Image (cartoon, rainbow, N blue to C red; front, side, top):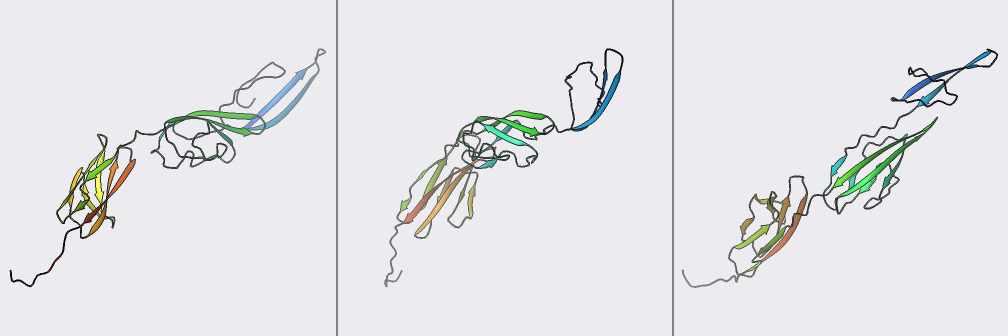
Length: 212
């Protein structure tokens, strides 16, 4: 064989470690010392998949598992939990819990070559964001509080999407009539939870003709 291996077996097994053409030369010798030779070339395609063994995916966020699939391979993923299509080369996963997927990538050619890998989709724990505060006021400031797991950062936005506080779990707001304020919690993986509060100002507006 052109890769340096040889055998005296009639049906030898050959170990191939890289894709490409392999030249096989066979010589047959009969009992009366007559010989015949035959040479042929076969193409070897070894499947290669470049996917990390562990992927961190935020809970419920659709994520593609194999963004650069090899179109020469036939893919199969199992189990099919949270996958849109287990036979797709680049399936979309929408995980709720950490799950280990078994990938099989097969190339059908001169021979059948198969690549297998376990890919763990790790889902970080829920951030447990919760908000509270006096949302109905008579014109005074409303104090809002957000709580979440340790090691999370909390920031606040108003209904216009403007950042009104970053890094504090408590804010003080005083909207005119009403406003919706949203608290966001983000962890070290970039996973986000959000919860909104609507503050209503029921303060009484009045005018007087009396001099002040």
